[in-house]
Image 1 (tube, rainbow, N blue to C red):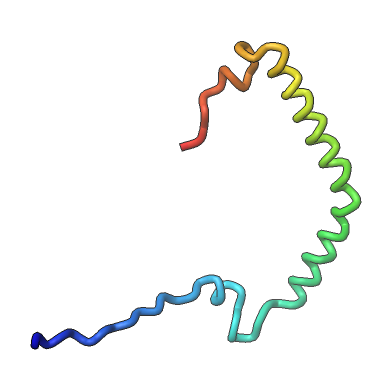
Image 2: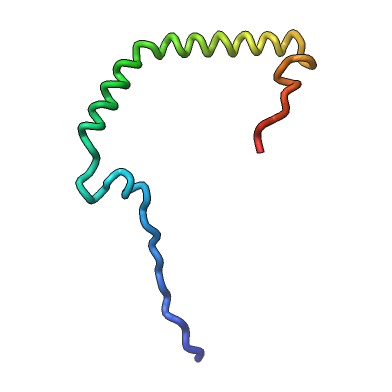
Length: 81
């Protein structure tokens, strides 16, 4: 019977854990509190942002329906790979 090489396991480093700080002191709680505070300050503006985006989408959809062959969406080349 042929001699087989032993199996060798390679565990790549967990980059996410090293970026977040898992196992070595955890997350910076002061930074987390600052982030939560900033997010709470933005939540009052969220509804206005969404309403503006929905309005723009409705207008673009209407333009496409009115002139499907000449709409800007048809003239621009795709940027997807």
